[in-house]
Image (cartoon, rainbow, N blue to C red; front, side, top):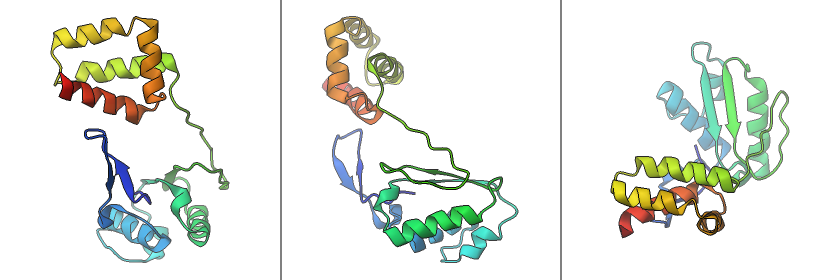
Length: 172
């Protein structure tokens, strides 16, 4: 579930608006969407979640900083009220948050070697490129200046690396 109002389309390279149904922009909307996914009921009722004893769930909240401060506090309180064996949460954010019992994990961009490895894996599954073209691209990645440019262009960001892979399909 994402609080973002736009998404990056890796195929077109364009920033697109999310349709309302894809957005979760408030605590109330978050609860409704969790209930919809878990219980097939689009209803603001925290007790459905709190009283759940039958399901084990992983809930991912993307772009946490987009929520209002009041909603952030409600989200943290909800997470704290839920049994950690029953519910697991992954929250993506650019800011630091503290939740009792949480384990923050920092994720940075890929370094130059991991950028190369990731790009190679994407190339292997790229059905729009001939084997000959893939071999030529793989060979060029052995040149340090090409590898440095790949890393510079994508900044080691997997989404941008994937987009570059999609561009190669269109220009080939």
